Length: 546
Picture 1 (tube, helix red, strand yellow):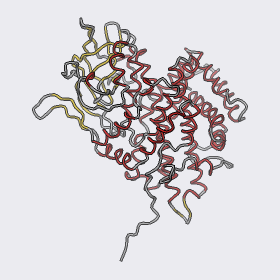
Picture 2 (cartoon, helix red, strand yellow):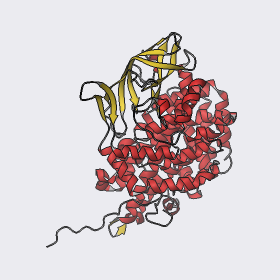
Picture 3 (cartoon, helix red, strand yellow):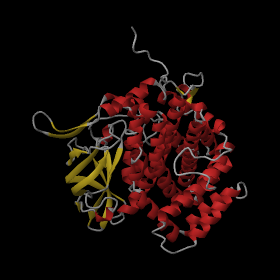
Picture 4 (cartoon, helix red, strand yellow):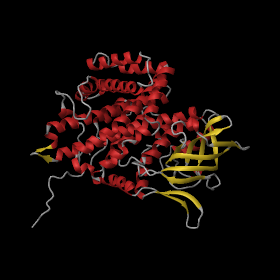
């Protein structure tokens, strides 16, 4: 007698094109990177394939292990990764996600890279060293001699792991090491010291509380030099092949992001070279921080997309109460709401990637817009992701709570991007600083939002309310989060009204700006075109396009 018949189970979400995302492809062309579509689709097919998905699972199932000493007692300070981690890294570096725009003078190069970073999502952990390498290049350019030496290797498309002298490798990765246990985001409280040497180098002594991806070749770090807090470049291996005394003390046990190694380190008179002037460390490294903040936003948008396509795929194949879930009105409301949030994040991240691209080419207006909008977007999109991930998981019911679904890993990952590169309060206060000290940034931001003026009455009313709030100086710090939220919503609304699908733009303005929305996902108002919105979030598994 058969007691266990498997039926009404959802087929695996595998064999699809992760770049088959209307908001992504439309934005890629709009922001000047349509030339990258073919490579993006190639990467998307890899990302939605069984092999990459399995590599992502294995990289998290077998997280990195710290080896402080070899069998003979010699200090080695190495991190051992599962082979799947290296395969994911090899694909990411080979497709230029780590630094290609800095060696590519085509307009849209940063947009193409952002789209690929968004698309290649079998595992979020390996994105950390990829992101930091991308962000390190402009900071390193504050030391032209060092940049001339290392930038060609940082932008090379060859993944070359292993501890060897940097200039003898075929490609390099860069990390960052700023925070200390007593300061966290307050890096000016750092106590690591930097002693100048006659040959122009420095010797660093101190402890760093978070150094992500300690297997990288080079690190940008902050230390107190005689002239104040200064940025330095620290190699893992010195030119003569000896290990720089940068000791790995332990790896952090984290909620998520488990495939990536985050460590505590100690500098024991480590050799370092100055990047930028003494006392200008924060100003120097801020170029790196702004780009990693953009990547936090991109990563959160990518996570939302993964969550919603997983939920829609499940609902399209799972039956309950004699109907497929996707045909049931309340589930359709939830799915459409998740899709609207996802598309709003995607259109924003592409606009900011475009601003980054044009800013890198000297566009002052885009530089001013980016200064405010990246901080606003990083705060809001990263804040929205955890709730979005939880709701996507719930669409699968108990199956979503099981590790095999992949959604518990996505959920554990979701709080990270809001914490990394300045938690919510840090980002909100950064927005206030920009508004009060740099009046041109608000002008650039308002010009962007006003490009949609008259197109939607709900957006126009929200912009008027925002201007009234910005004009009120009372208790401004206390209201910082609310102000940033309003800035983010009118910016997303303006972008969707101008560039988004009409059904998505209408649902966004009705719910997020018009007040027709509850506190949970799945509370869109009547009249929303659920079918059109959900269709844009439906993955084409096994189709010729995939």
